[in-house]
Image 1 (cartoon, rainbow, N blue to C red):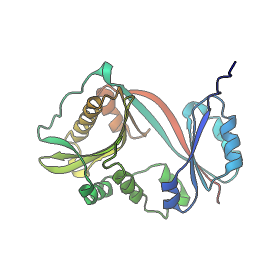
Image 2: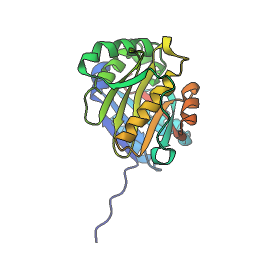
Image 3: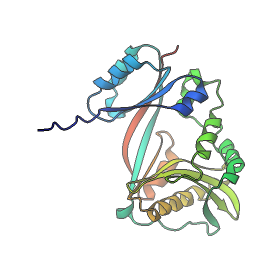
Image 4: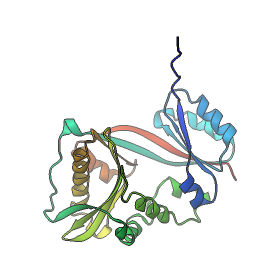
Length: 251
């Protein structure tokens, strides 16, 4: 009689793109089960230059144990993850701005996307900003690279929003039949306060439904309250929350 495999209580993956950008080995970990022992043991043995660890906020007591591993401990951020049941909530309403359009980005949009990212995310606080060891890096360049990497993929997409024919926002996504995930999105500062973000969200969810995605997933830092208010009124509900932790083992 075969013995069923024991589910992994955590995931661990090297991050080549971040490793190149930061000039150190970066490895990402996430606690996905109840037993944190294997995760702590792996960190104790592997000790990458930079470990980026995500744990549920319900496991706050684990932070004290992670602090005993050595290296420099940084509490990066607290993320909240919302989901929308696309079948249950139905198709979203159309855009409130009649001149709003959402189109697929092409390779020729690279410079435009760089400009959008620069204007939207310069100074934006993420878990990277919390880490003093990463202060010398132009973190917005990482978002540019990340955004361009979503152009023209089979399951990854980059979409440009236009209002009256002028680029005003963008979103990057990862789409499967299980879920459409909003990876990164934002609205240019001078277009904010005009309902563009809501139109962007509605159009993105509609695109997910067209692709057959049964749900929509989106996340942000807990103190980013404005977008969460929009999400709730568009059929999203809070699913879970997690801490992002950096452990600099290289100093």
